Amino acid sequence: MVTGDNAVTAQAIATECGIYTDGLIMEGPAFRVLSDEEMNERIPKLQVLARSSPEDKRILVAKLKALGETVAVTGDGTNDAPALKTADVGFSMGICGTEVAKEASEIVLMDDNFTSILTALKWGRAVNDAVQKFLQFQVTVNITAVLVAFVSAVANPEMKSVLTAVQLLWVNLIMDTFAALALATDPPTDKILNRLPQPKSAPLITVNMWKMIIGQTIYQLVVTFVLYFAGNRILGYDPHDATQQKELATMVFNTFVWLQIFNELNNRRLDNKFNIFEGVHRNKFFVGITILMVGLQVLIIFVGGAAFEIKPINGVQWAICLVTAFVCLPWAILIRLFPDEWFAVIAKTVGAPFLAVYGFLAKLMGKIGSMFKKNKKNDEVSEETKAGSEKTASSTPGAMFAGQGPTPEIILSESVDGINGNPTIQIEDLEKGRT
Image 1 (cartoon, helix red, strand yellow):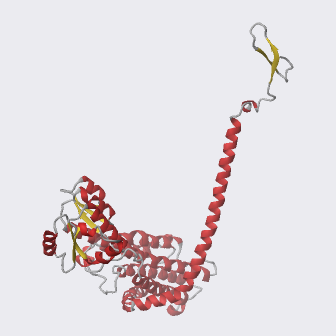
Image 2 (cartoon, rainbow, N blue to C red):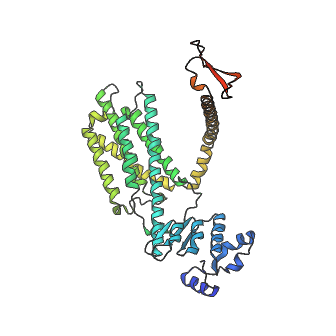
Image 3 (cartoon, rainbow, N blue to C red):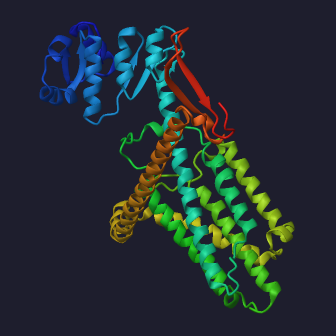
């Protein structure tokens, strides 16, 4: 707590608010004369700063940020503006706050109620979680779709992917539109405040997210490739029967889409807890969009044959698609049971060669890009120089007659006119031969 009151009053208020426990209490005059080393030593223990000036507040905020802390400041007066501007997040009061404080802050509490800060915290964390949920879902779909399309096209004698262009467009619609609306609309809960805050250096895709992404990608690839490459032997289909082959391709497409629908439920949680349906009844968008995706997928299978190049399938085939896709839910439980520390070690060991190759390619492409930029810059300088030269040439005397043949010759006679005393100027036209 930073205040202009004396130390006794400040300690009493801070104790009542639960800010002061057994930490350090300092006054502004003593704080501002500390050296940088002394400030770095005492600031982590500081709980109350009394009799402080606006500059003391600003210095305290700047030092906390230099120590790696994320700093939020509340204030309502003009003297709070420097600290509000320096802080990572500034909260000002909408009713009693000055215009200077409002301009210097990032968030204005319109009702002057400190409980609104909790609302801001909850929604901030909810938005961050929504972005991570969508990324976890989208990266999984992207990796799986690309590998399935590439491998199936390479393995096919006609270089045709098992997923057609229209089918991939439908998958892309699920991935980019429906999933974004469904996963980004979970309202915040009070439980979201129980976890520790994430540091600013925390990656957007965490180790736990990569674990789920890799785990679900492996399962989806295994299921899809088994159906595509071994489906004929498992189901007893004739490889030369066009109808059965179209049914098998339809099953691959149907299973792939249902894998994404069930995996969307997995992505509602970013931690290692198992209850993926927690609070789902409070998110009407998620329920409605999931029902819409299920209905559209069923409709596509039965009536979308011409556009999607598929064929309606029977009940047994539907059961195979749904059961194999549903298994991704218990598979997610096994993924969550796998320790994050073990996965981090494995990922670091396996991914080291890929990171080395990526770093080399990044440096190589950076050098190539810089060379192109340098050549482009030199060309621009040359064009500017050429344009300047042409402009200079066009402004010289006689340039206007450049396209009009020989320039008339001007002869200055040495004789002087006796009447006026002025030199005589004769202009000779060389082309016509007259003066």
